[in-house]
Image (cartoon, rainbow, N blue to C red; front, side, top):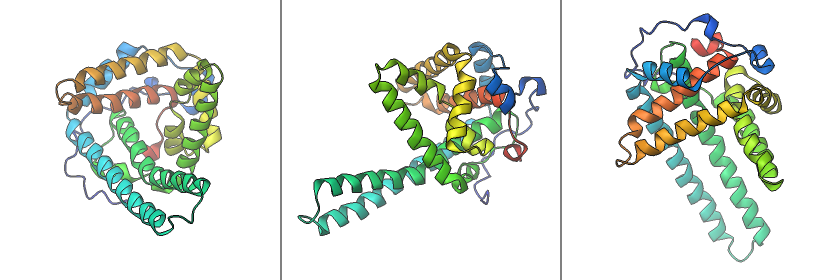
Length: 253
């Protein structure tokens, strides 16, 4: 994918991260990593300076893609339903709505994960540019499969007394990032994420709650604070991912 949107690049003179702070897929699965919420947030904050414009423009691009995809599919499926009105059963209509949502997901998942990978690139000191958010469409099918399997697993967990669903919603945190960044299949990515997060599940829960609180507070003044908090969130997630699973050379390129 051509980086024609690369002009608003972040400050690119950040030093590369200490290799000792980088993990690997094998070490992550084995639980051979350490982190504290405070040190991850501190490093993310330091790396947010100079990256806000690029990440906010990338989020804007993702938002435009989402809106356009939704409008087009609503128009297409709405027209089909209107043309076939009175000839379609309720089950067919439900099936059409599911297909519509899958089409939208197929379009928006790659740039959504692209935001996470931009945060990871910033975390390891690699250059970032807006166009990089579009680089993951070649993994659309495994990303879609991973998202569907995650959703099914969490829903089943919620049905089973809620607690398993809460556990899985945290444990599967890195599934789609592993699909995009490591090239794992959906089931392998789910397994790797669960095994890695399981070792320190409550620390990850605390990390997620802290980021959620930061963004909730940032959204209070008309959402203006999100200009700072959202890039910070993606970079913090990238810092944490790198400490657990490391970063592939292809991702840094």
